Length: 318
Image (cartoon, rainbow, N blue to C red):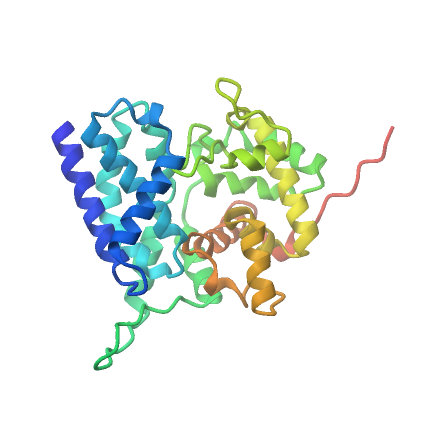
């Protein structure tokens, strides 16, 4: 098993390295160095200690590289990760300590599959003599919305959601956030509170430590309240309420929830834009997938669009 893990993870790293070299403005050495530094700063060494040293370094490198690809600008670049990610997930699942990372990656396989679909329908730019190969352009926001609606049309109701949806909706209402947005948890974690991202997000709503502390949650083990459905739902609802109050638009609020409010505000300012569609193609690749997937999920689970959402009325004091 150890040798199999080592070989699979090594192959994954090679695939990612080849994808990353498409950006001729950054050297592979730069990317590897950056990924290693990122992994050192973000991945939980205690979690990875179950692996032997060689395997541990491979896992750290892979998870860091995946995160870097998600933060890249080009959606189609994610397609190269699909098959190798599928082969790595069972290996990560075989270790209890690395299972949360496996669950995180499994929840995001949709992004890789959709990227692969888009790769087949978006023509690559024609090579020009003496010029570097240009990246495949991002799909339009409308095309992404359409492909996500199609992908989720027949997706069955998730078993993991049954204990949580009716229980957590009142929390969203109490924070004056549309209760339908509880379904963000399907997109973030497949309603599995064990999920942890390589960047350190955790729980049903994948709250980063700084965001959780901002909304008064403890993030210290063993009292990490992000793993508790009710406190994490309240913090997520409070954050969404704040973001919607700031951006006045649910697509922008969702983009900020995923990519960070600073990233979204900076793009709006630099591009003198006011709406999501005007900046969508410049957001991180994961965010370009995340927003339309949330939209399609709401349509599938609740039969509503983001435009249909209504802020609950304030409950009168007794």
